[in-house]
Each structure stands twice: as C-alpha cells, then as structure tokens.
Image (cartoon, rainbow, N blue to C red; front, side):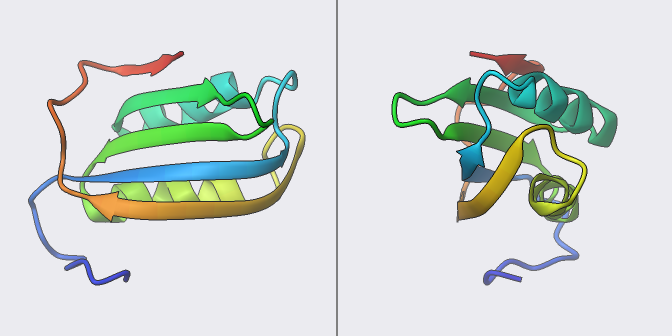
Length: 99
C-alpha cells in the first residue's frame, strides 16, 4: 500500500491530482461530500491546467477509500487518471473545503 502501514493509527496526508473532464461538473463538491462521509479533512481545488487537486488527511485506509472513489465509475464528469503522493500530515484542516 504505497509503503504505508495499513494498520497504523497515525494520520497521513494524500495529495491527488485528478485528470480528465473534472472541472465545471460538480467534481469538487462531490469529492467534498465523499470525504466528509468518510471522515477526512482537507480540500479540493481546480487547477489552471484542468485538473482537480485533492488534499485529504486521515487514516491511511480512509484515504485509500477516497482514492478508490476518485478512480471509480460514479464520479461526476470523466476521470482519465489519478496521481497521488503520500506525505506526513501538515498543519491540519478543520474540515474538508472547496477552494
């Protein structure tokens, strides 16, 4: 699992870049709703090149769940690919927001 211990109770941060037709289709709002259901904090923001950047903090299995949803068939728009990096948590987020 990307070098992470799936059983760790230490929170992690995953930053994902979602490619495809993911702007102007409600993708960020959909992502926020899924992240809040899972219990993650962070944000989703549109990038100038047409991608959406998703930063999520929480337990690794929960971050994996969000990544699976981002790659799944039920997203708004059309996802052509998701690239992610795993890092230690940053200053932390109070909730999951749209930027």
